[in-house]
Amino acid sequence: MGGKSVSSNIVTATVTAGRQTEADLLDTAKAAFTNNYIAYEVIIVKVDTGNNETKLGGAKFDLYSEDAVENGEIKIGAAPLKSNLISSSDEQDKGKVSLGPLTPGTYYLFETEAPSGYTAMDMPVEIVVSENRVSLMQGSRNENGTISQEKAELTVMNSAGTALPSTGGPGSGLLYLLGFLLVTFAGAGFVMNRKRKYAA
Image (cartoon, rainbow, N blue to C red):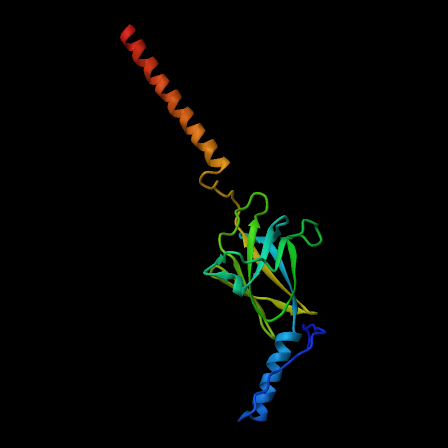
């Protein structure tokens, strides 16, 4: 069947003595085969939210397994399956980044750095790989990837804009300084106007 990679791993199926029928044994063996032998190369294409034809290079991602994430947050001490995945800036493959062959399961893609001029995603993208399908959920948006020649391609969107500086960061310090200077100059102007008024 097209779209499947076969690994060289040894497949084992546990058989328990008792009342298992032949159909039960076949189901057990099939599940073991599916989980160990099927894999798709998942390719993410980073695009502009307002225009899917605008491909975005330079986005950075980390990929985590389902066990490493809870309620959209990375568990303490959890390590990514793959890190520093960067969407291509080359014209031919612009916006594309391969997550590598993924076996059936649920994965979470976190954006660690947005493309220049764009806002980073505040929630991970959920990717689900099954025997005959690869799907993605980004917020309320669902997408089923087109599987061809052992590959599945999916789009991830970014909105234009600049992320606000975090509290306590260098960006917020600059804002505080500018605010302080504005207040200082406004106060100085007020005092000077009063002096001129009384001098007159």
